[in-house]
Image 1 (cartoon, helix red, strand yellow):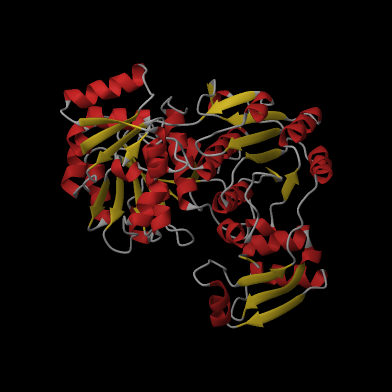
Image 2 (image 1 turned 135 degrees about the vertical axis):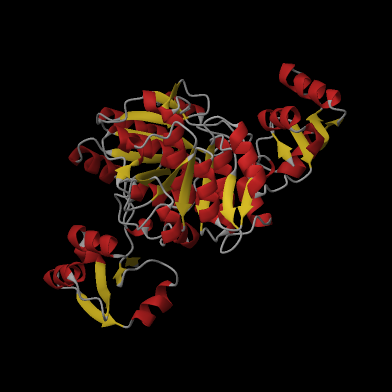
Length: 243
Length: 243
């Protein structure tokens, strides 16, 4: 399920085949709801007008704005699909997770990546959190909109992405520069390590820069999704899209 | 419990009376461990050398660096203590949560606030998540180091903080400016609303600026601790402390 005006509209424009049915709240009759109805009809998708209480029952406290879509799960990307997408996308921004094993953190990173317009999230097949129901729930819909590329060998994939013209930026407590001193405006892969352990040696060797994030407190490190959010925020700020 | 060289050292320097006992790993004999031992002895605190396995058993996967301290819980702050601390602190950076009801989010915000050197976290007494065991666990030790000021009336407290010379910056999806266009270098209170609902009207009216954060994706909004992390990151970047 994907809900909210913006999310459902984006899905109907980008990927209407994945939508099986759109639910619109009975009394929602305005330009934005009409546009969604029009897009759904144009793509041959079923639209149903439902009672506000029925939406509430399915979505609880979520801010659905009277719009809900049933969608087919987003298929994961292969390494080849990732490379194809990167080549088609100028200044692509990617997020890679190196050794993040907690599904909650995977979901939180996916949600953050989605909000920051990341092209895809890259995770290694082994020693990585599965994109299970718990991760999907925390992702709050982002698992249906931001593709996850699962790769056999993260270091190899980073090498291929470098070959495609991207630069690799690792987040590292011992990084040589604060994030804002690193140019994040072109095609970039931002790589986050596991909490505590950080980036693995092999991953670190593939990084063109190591970015330091705030760590002024008594606590050892930031949560990985918060650290990813800071680095992505900095990238968007540099790109003039910081808000 | 507080663990890690930096955290335990900071606690022994700032607030040694709260430490009841320090555990140091048996084989950890270096300048930084020695300094902790010296600080603990100087403050009349017990130090015990223990086996690495015993630390492991108590702390699991946490990165303890061979140092653990048992501490008395950090007392919450009253509004008056908050104001006193603000007056003593030039360019104080505070984080306030308006209507954040999930203990997990409270803990995550506390952890992020701690990493960013926030003076205190401000929460309203009503309609707010309790600082319970679940929140403390997610805070990963920050509940023992960053004070939480619980106030009866958040709007009133924001008014008093303005009187003390601070400016109030709310995070808001409809904010008039991206965060990086707002001056965050002086004394500032950053205010986060509940996910979905955002800031309450009364809180919003007390804000000197409303900061917009990235929202380019299909998903409705950022997790509140990630949004807080972005805004705090931006404040530290402007203060030349971004990493």
